[in-house]
Length: 345
Image (cartoon, rainbow, N blue to C red; front, side):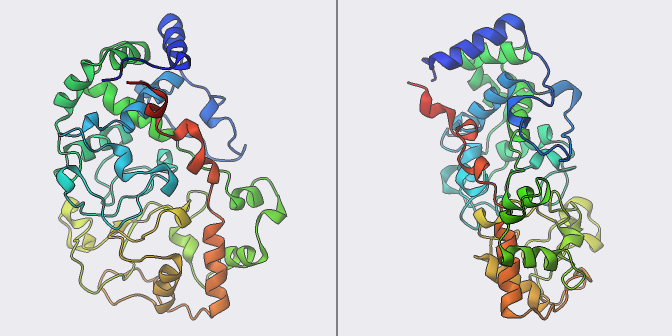
């Protein structure tokens, strides 16, 4: 597999192998530029971030070594240019198997209190196991994946330097989680307008859209609450009268949870089309139209979903505001991109 690496990466390995793994402070590179009043990230005590842990996780995130037939990686469904989501309704796993739900964005996943659309996974480290073992995704066994990784000398060296242990399921899940927690977006036009008081950061239309978004006329912010633009609750938004996907009930077996899904974050939403749990709406305009109509009747539909009576300009203003939540830095910066492009085989 990976045998020859760039000089810079070897220097990184040597330094960390020599001085040991130091826990990250708020001044680590990937958290350097957050607004001073942006929420702090809570890291597990057994997985405090270091540069090497993040870089090891980044390499594994982009490596198809984690899939049964070595054809699919985490990044196959969570692409940087699409805000670490995908551009299709359902992504393809091993053997071109079609996924069962739209791939969510991983931007600011560090702030989520639980994971998957049904909310059944309590930590990000545990969530890493889900796509690895899912039949329609990577369809592999984490123990076998770790054994495969351990045969690679570079991964073994990095693992010992980062976690003081050879590659194993512990290292795989924690390093990928460390990388995913580094995917923090806080530099959108909205953030510049809100946190840095740059009033010209938002267009007049986006400013009107922000006012609408936060108003009782729409109640958008009741579920999509700043700064994460999600309150992480489980809701039915009236997408269908009859759902093919039963939602959270699969986890709780409680009838009141039928067709409920976790409220997604809207950060970088303009880059992560298509939308909804099944990717059935193609554009932000369609999303706004859905909510403006009040959705389809369903016994569990949130009472906040009702006809909004927005005129054409108000709908355009809401779209302009949603577009202002795009942080281009995380979409393009090489520190989040595929590291294997700089590794020779």
